[in-house]
Amino acid sequence: MALFSKNYPPEIAARIPPGQRLVKTWPVLHYGPIPTFDGTNWDLELAGLVENPVTLSYQELRALPNADVPADMHCVTGWTTLDNSWHGVSFRTLLELVKPTPEAKWVIAHCEYGYTSNLSLEAMSDEDVLVAWANGGQDLEPEHGWPLRLVVPKRYAWKSAKWLTGLEFVDENKRGFWEVRGYHIHAEPFGEERYSYQEGARAELEP
Ligand SMILES: Nc1nc2c(c(=O)[nH]1)N[C@H]1C(S)=C(S)[C@@H](COP(=O)(O)O)O[C@H]1N2
Ligand SMILES: [Mo]
Image (cartoon, rainbow, N blue to C red; front, side, top):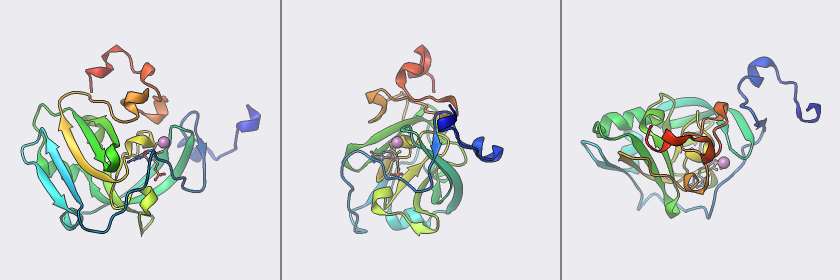
């Protein structure tokens, strides 16, 4: 409808998934309170079906090879931001460290206050997936996930779990916080995979 259409140049329009609108500011969106972080009492636990489970202190995590990842962001409520620049550690670097066993097919992100999200290991293994502590050259604000968040650019942003405390490798699909509330396990914005009823019968089993 003309009322809602914006005349973006084609190269911009091509980056806005169906049903999404571009916003200029960076909205804050989450369920529940914002945790505080004072630099102590924090670690990242990498566990489950891996050869080498590790618990990383904040210093240990940041000492791993760092990565810069440009990415767009799409929230299932309808907003999209373009050209974010994330800084952190590539998920692939964490994979090399822990070495998932062949049985590992899914990854559960665990966060402060019990928020979880799940994704297939295949989706997580994309080269642009990272755990990040900075955006646009600045440390993340607490409301955007400080001290660490997951970033999965090619999936709706509820998969980009803020206040990350652990990544668990499992052999079956265990739905996360929004996934049990009717949202999609794969959540690809360009396929408009918003809701679980769109998943199809095999989705519970097939990564
Ligand atoms: N721990 C946690 N992470 C979360 C959420 C949440 O409720 N808790 N909400 C998700 C949703 S729905 C979105 S759209 C993004 C928003 O990230 P932002 O607030 O940095 O824009 O965070 C995601 N990560
Ligand atoms: Mo969202």
